[in-house]
Length: 147
Image (cartoon, rainbow, N blue to C red; front, side, top):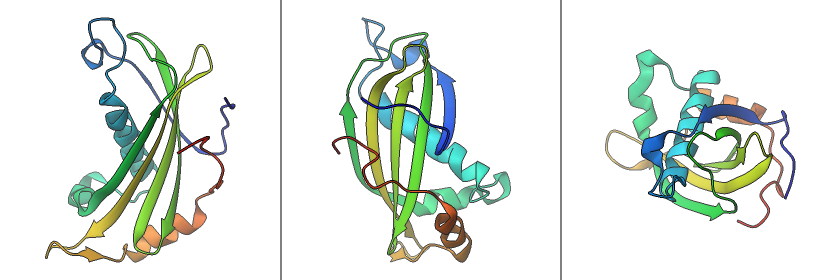
């Protein structure tokens, strides 16, 4: 279904017991949480988010989410999450590949779309800093197989 690359932002973590169902398979709702963890790690790595500016993270509202489940991740699996990001107008789009590291199986593909929200609750343009970061990000249009 594809191969892992180091071209994109990478985040690794283990599957925890509380994230699984009675069959020790990751519950489908947790794939969005995994994507969020990777997105927050990306934001810290790119200095879009710092501990001093944590409130800025809440200003990116989620507009849309899509998850394609491909192969179940299980308790104890090591996950490798790749992320790519781009800006289209005022929208910020993230795409994620969630790999089961030891087997090189693709567990899920995820896409999320966001927009910055001002203190008045209305959509606004991304900050100049976020725009500058986004200009440096690599994007492959056909990266996800079917979302």
